[in-house]
Amino acid sequence: MTADIRPAAPFDVPAVKSVVDAAFSPYIERIGLVPAPMEEDHAENVVAGRVYVTGDPVVGLLVLVPHADHLYLDTIAVHPDAHGRGVGRELLAFVDAHARSLGLPEVRLMTNALMWENQKIYPRCGYEFTERRVEGPYDRFHYRKVLD
Image (cartoon, rainbow, N blue to C red):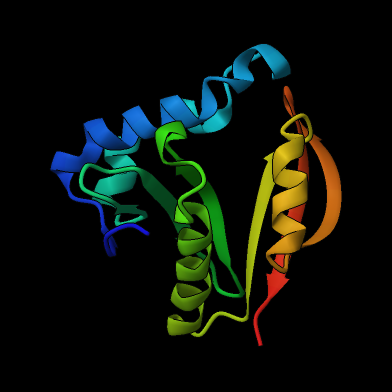
C-alpha cells in the first residue's frame, strides 16, 4: 500500500505531470490522440485544490471536482511502476470517502472507449455504465456510482 492520500501542493506539480504522462502516454497510439488528462493544466488544478496525491515519491493521483449533486472523478492515474500494489483501489476508496464527507450522493467519471481496461475495472468497483457519448475527438464511456 501507499502513504496517505493528501492534497497536492505546488511543489507536486512536476510529479503530477510525470505520473499523468506515464499513466496515459501508452494510450496515445491506441486512441490516435493525446488523452485529455495529459492536456490538463496541472498547476491550475493543484492551486484550485482539485488534485490529491499518494506516495513519496508520488505514484498515484486524483483530480476531483465537486458539483452540487455529485463528485466528478476527472482523473485517476497510477504510475506503471506502481501497478499491482493496490494504489488504484486505495485511490478509488478515497474518492468514495471524500464524496461522503462533502455530503454528495454519487461519484461520476468517464473513460475513453478504447481504454478497455478501465471498462473492466470500474464495474468491479461499483460503478455502473450510464452512456457512451462522443465529445469532440473523444469517444467516452460515462459511469456513476451511487453511494450508500
